[in-house]
Length: 374
Image (cartoon, rainbow, N blue to C red; front, side):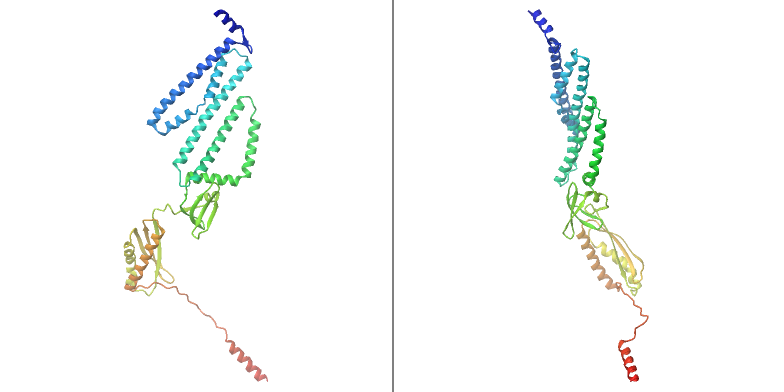
């Protein structure tokens, strides 16, 4: 009975292959699938234990391994089983090509998950208060990376299957250049937005100055940035234009260096002029949150004795600086009045070289001439 059944399996063929060989190939495929699946599960358990001690890299590796496709594993196991069969040469070549396709797809899945995890962790670590901007940039970056990855995988698979991809790649290159030229301004703003998110020259809430424009950043979009100016109006600027300009970010000012000048008139007594730097120093040191730097008689101007004074405000707040400067000015007015120092008043001298004759005199002269003529 057993011999008859064995003969039946040996003699019965399907697609020119005996049923016994097909069952053997199926058994090998199932065995390979079970062994590989167990090996991946074992590796995952070990990596999970290791990630508890190692940290982020181990966690990313766990997530990547969890992206292993059971369907692709089963397909790979079936290909191993097919290699056991005595197939014609042309079928063996096809099986070899399918091996590369399966491997490329699985590697692509692993890399795709690694890119998604890496970008999500990066944007979460560098997140700002502008959640919309962060999510939009993360989506844009992930989409671009995935398109590039799967384009490479697809071209590699087509090349392995014998498809001539040279003309296809050339067409993609020409088409890509044409599209890039058509939307170069939009792409420039998009990449500038990505540069702002990565480099962070400013963030929402920062007070910035760009050339003649100054205001508080309200929104950083994919194409434009919106600034609320001191006058109240909203300024909308292209991201590419902002990146190419010099940006002064006053929000990140740690301390403010102040240089102020004043002039004393030339009729101020010499002793009062000598006391002026000391008076300025005392007035500055009397204020809180400041550090005195210097006060000097800088030179002799056309209209006044010119003084230059420097001090540091330890807090970057503009209103605090103005309050301190006002208090210093009040003290200088009081102290200079006591020592007899006089602030210079701008004066302008007008030199008259000639005066025109009075019109009435001209009229009288003309009348007299007419009287004499008559």
